Image (cartoon, rainbow, N blue to C red; front, side):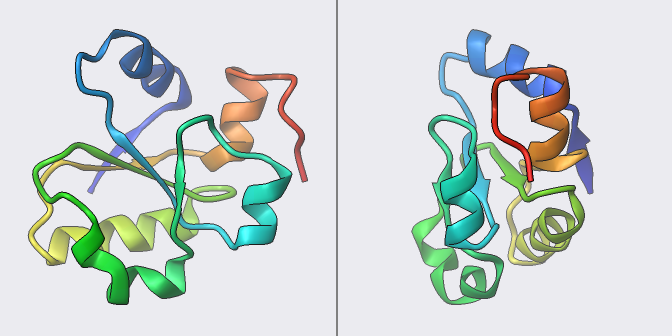
Length: 106
């Protein structure tokens, strides 16, 4: 499973002609506290039943609070045939610490 650092994601988002889909798998109440702009919220427990909503050909960066849930979802997506999936290492918390210090943390 591939991982992407917050700094690499920031660079990708600013330079990509077709930015990756940011799949935030946290619970809705967590997503409301903070999220990366443009992220789509599908809670981890819903991903198996909603996998058809995702484009297997698009680059995906899976996000959670610290990187554990997103790692499991990224591995699940790879098992479903997704080949361009990344886990955001350190999750949204690492993003807040290294990229967006104004983002609320919990």
